[in-house]
Length: 305
Image (cartoon, rainbow, N blue to C red; front, side, top):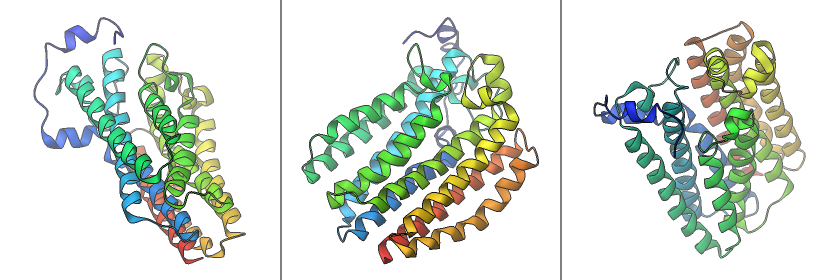
């Protein structure tokens, strides 16, 4: 890929990243977006009486490998473009020069390969080969978020993709590959998970809003502005609660998930009070915890019902 003249010079000032730096570059605070949909999708499969631990395990490998692959791919693409040069937050492997761009790209592609292999196994055991097309779309969506000549993440469509892939596709795909059916409760649960996954991305983009605007990265946060992005964050948490209530109409035990509202108090207060920069790293961490707590309570409620 050619993104500009920055790629060449960066190759010449590289150290060797440590294991802890590679882990930080994988952005572990975003991994709840991979864990949550698999947990909820498995709970929805259990509601159908068809939960399968082996298939849930494969789905988890797919989700985690895709999330890590996306993070490394973003690190590479943003790094060679120069949009990560002035950022607050986790270490950027490429922009900081601790790893060669080609090495970061290889890590991204390797993660995608792991996701593809696990996905192929999941398709094989489920016997639904048309799901291969879904897998291909997931890989393309992961790469073109910040990769290619016209990345959709730079056009303000990142939240849409996260809602679709880490909400609808991940939850319903996990459910379908186990139960071979999808019920209305699973759809409502997928909306809730997608909304919270979007809230994670909104937090990240709110933190990077000033530097993204300067770099020409027109994320949704840049388009909405600071105040609008803070309202969007709160609206997404409200959507997750509303979707959970909708699930409870047919699976009453799903109301358990509303207890996660306690975990929402801190990040909502911080966002409303105007937290910026490194203060939003705490919001990102707490939003991830909120998504995990909500997901496991919702999954339990679906299974109990």
